Length: 117
Image (cartoon, rainbow, N blue to C red; front, side, top):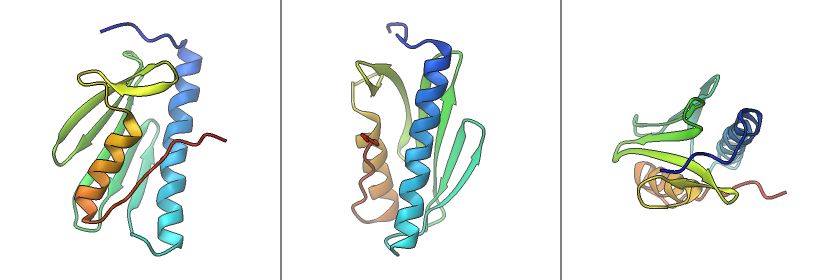
């Protein structure tokens, strides 16, 4: 595993932005009556409560410069590489993984995309 290329302040900025993008998408889905996913954020931990009672947890890991995602199907660790968050085991992109698990646990296709504005 390679060390993160981000400084501590860049890591905190990147992870704060990532969590804000996810929260904003959950709010849009609620407003548009797409799906009701409740969010609860405490610092660097974001909990997504799914309609079926299951949860997805996204947690920042500052000492490791990683983001962890825990879903019903398992846990995943992501590291920032070349401007993207990628799985440390298989290289899958964070938002693709999150979208996959949201879709599985919601029983419908849901896609969260990074904010590229």
